[in-house]
Amino acid sequence: MKFREIFFNKIFTLRNLFFISNFLVLGLFFYALAHDFFREWKPYQKEYKLKEKKRVRDLMEKGDAATKSGLNDELKKAKAMRLEIKQILATDMNRVDRCITCHLGHDSFTNPTLINDYKEHPYAAPKNEIHEKHPFEKYGCTICHEGQGLATTFVGAGHMPKDEAQKKVWKEKHDWKTIEFWEHPMKAGPQIFATCSKCHEAHPPVKGVEIVKKGKQLFFENGCIGCHQVRGEGGTIAPDIAEETSVKPLARIDFGFAVSAGLINKEERTLENWIRLHFTANPAVLTPGDPEGHLSPDPKNPQPVAPTAMPYFGFNKDESEALVAYVSSLKREKIPYTYRIPALKEPEPTFSNAVKHGRFIFQKYGCTGCHGKNADQGIPIFNKQGGRAPDLVKTVGTFTREELIEKIQTGVNPEEKENPKGPTPPVYMPSFKDKIKGQEMEHLVSYLLSIAEKTEEW
Ligand code: HEC
Ligand code: HEC
Ligand code: HEC
Ligand code: HEC
Ligand code: HEC
Image (cartoon, rainbow, N blue to C red; front, top):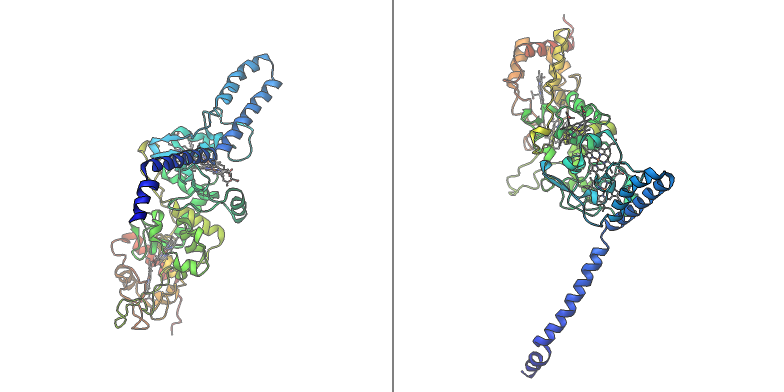
């Protein structure tokens, strides 16, 4: 009782409270000052200002009276440069980009000509054709580079190193790590060219964009479309890589198996790397399913799930990078139509005979994805009788023309299981009933019959 009285009457008094909180507020005030003083971007702006003043003075020293007076204005501008957060309001792009808070070389106000002699980042403003054709005040930066436009720190902006060496340097210099809670970190290296197709439906004819074209070609040749869709066109076995994969939220990606297999570490869990892993690693390691049904809710009635249907293609590094760029390039954003340059419809190639055309049709509908580039290598299929899709060179000879057409039109579904207790095989022969018709079907079958292994007749 006594203690309470003393406490409230002598110690915890309004007067004392007022006294203490005054100190707290003062403390906070100094903290805020210090915090503001040590902002990551400030040293860059201070240094830039010094550099600008020196650059103009050096020019003045060298020049005659006339150039001197011309440069006076520039010197005044450099001297008047304030330390502040700078931003580009690119309303058409739906963006506020503050990259120029550090990348002052790209700020057309501090650097009207957008040329200086500064070679080092973040001031170097490379006068490349692409920067010149897209005025920064309209486009901002992140429409092409991606990353977090509003951020004013190196990590927050989402810089991504282009290789291990750069990563090491950045960790030392900038305390680099991947940006958390931001779905689209910057594009490193040639991957930046995946973003041009947001506006240029056909990839513009500039150096660098070839990577996307190459990826598209690989996608075609390898018959990915046999399983995957691109904006609703293609197979039904796997996700639509344009509408689903290219914009997949991180929360919907399960990196668990990739991490435990040592394929990727925690800081590398980005959508771009998820896509990349499907080419550089065996997809069955990423999505192993649950073939024994151990994870079923009811152990008495196990529901086994097969590993992913996606085969391991064994692409090399260049091919993988090209495919990553192509898949990423399918991401779309709401951009006013005035910025969009529609593609011209690509004419279908012409062929000198039915068999050659048929081979093209075989690729066009993604038959290669399951039967191999030359129709002679069926992909492995989990728990299917025989374990693989058929080698068509060996089997089509046993069909008549009509039977082949029938087979392709109706498909085979469901597949026979090897182990009746095991999971349903994840791949089946799809039906192409309304997709391949008329001459395309005739020529496709001519191609198949032309490659059929000749059986000895006796
Ligand atoms: C806090 C300051 C800061 C901000 C904000 C910032 N950057 Fe940077 N940026 C740097 C620095 C410093 C480097 C140089 C890193 C190095 O090589 O040491 C750099 C490098 C880069 C590079 C070159 C990478 C390479 O491979 O050499 C690009 C591209 C880039 N930034 C784009 C951006 C974009 C786009 C934004 C806005 C989303 C942005 N930056 C925001 C400081 C910043
Ligand atoms: C229209 C697309 C586009 C826009 C908008 C754009 N950039 Fe770039 N930028 C590129 C491309 C493409 C490259 C790489 C050129 C190459 O590799 O030859 C590049 C290169 C750079 C580099 C040099 C990287 C290096 O390796 O040296 C920096 C820094 C940079 N951009 C910063 C910016 C900043 C800051 C903005 C905004 C003010 C911006 N960019 C706006 C497309 C763009
Ligand atoms: C936000 C939309 C948008 C993005 C993103 C974009 N561009 Fe452009 N680009 C345009 C528009 C609009 C033009 C102007 C076309 C014109 O002037 O007729 C253009 C012009 C160009 C030109 C000049 C073409 C010519 O005929 O003069 C080149 C080259 C170019 N872009 C390359 C690129 C590259 C490479 C990228 C990706 C790094 C890219 N663009 C990203 C909208 C965009
Ligand atoms: C035999 C069918 C099949 C073929 C052929 C195939 N895939 Fe897949 N792919 C799948 C399936 C099924 C998945 C989904 C993984 C899962 O959850 O089982 C997948 C997943 C992917 C993913 C990740 C998708 C996501 O949203 O997470 C990418 C990217 C991908 N495939 C690209 C390709 C490319 C590029 C090719 C051609 C070189 C290709 N695939 C060929 C069946 C296939
Ligand atoms: C998603 C994978 C997949 C795609 C895409 C696919 N097939 Fe098949 N195909 C199979 C499987 C699996 C079988 C074996 C079905 C069975 O168990 O009888 C098969 C069987 C066949 C057969 C019968 C051969 C035999 O030995 O029984 C023909 C012919 C055939 N496919 C042609 C095609 C053609 C032509 C295309 C493209 C228009 C195509 N397939 C696309 C998976 C595929």
